[in-house]
Length: 242
Ligand SMILES: NC(=O)c1ccc[n+]([C@@H]2O[C@H](COP(=O)([O-])OP(=O)(O)OC[C@H]3O[C@@H](n4cnc5c(N)ncnc54)[C@H](OP(=O)(O)O)[C@@H]3O)[C@@H](O)[C@H]2O)c1
Image 1 (cartoon, rainbow, N blue to C red):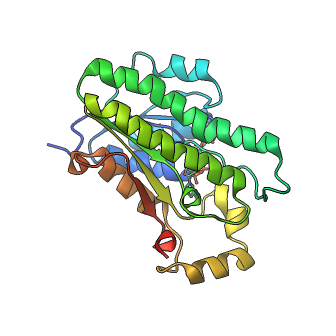
Image 2: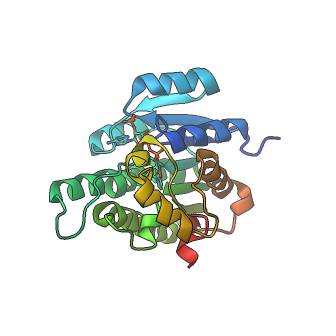
């Protein structure tokens, strides 16, 4: 019997780097995956490659999230859709960027949790939710006032959701990755003046790969993690442990 035995798991941000790899690993582990994002062409490519199903919705729209999720027989969710926002300090932040990054990363993930958890409760088989947070919620990173705040809010959504959904046998956890060189991060973290000192300070001295993040996400969704809920798991090469 496969690890997920055909359980249905919704993955947002599946048209991106970490989400796409998560879909591949979940399908490989025997899950029925519904991959979502805004870019239908990229999702169609992923569906052709993996056999996943797809659904297009915008994390900024409650109506679009509700319409897409209501009625799905879900066992699990990966809230991976997100936006990097800006590199700015509290002194020069563009507050419209703050609003948008909060709307996508925190509000959007909460809305997916809202409508998905209703379906998971209706099915009555328990389940698991993994929120893709960031190292930026655990430690202060220069230039990360908006993004770090949105992921700190997401970590709180994780803890409160774990408390409220535990009675239904639904576990909720965060993973908090360091940098993966996807388009979201490469323009900033790939700069030698940024990359050099950061990697020097990190115990493992290397960036993460998409697979380094997807593996722990799959673990937290699986029954092997049946006693783990409400945690924010750093996948950061030890950076936040210093
Ligand atoms: N890369 C890193 O270094 C890193 C580190 C820590 C945490 N993370 C987190 O990991 C997650 C995935 O990041 P990634 O690096 O894989 O980024 P990515 O390749 O840029 O993918 C971002 C994903 O989010 C989706 N998305 C963005 N805005 C959306 C919206 N309004 N509605 C629906 N979907 C939306 C995108 O969908 P479309 O392309 O279809 O619009 C895409 O699938 C994010 O939550 C990010 O914050 C990334």
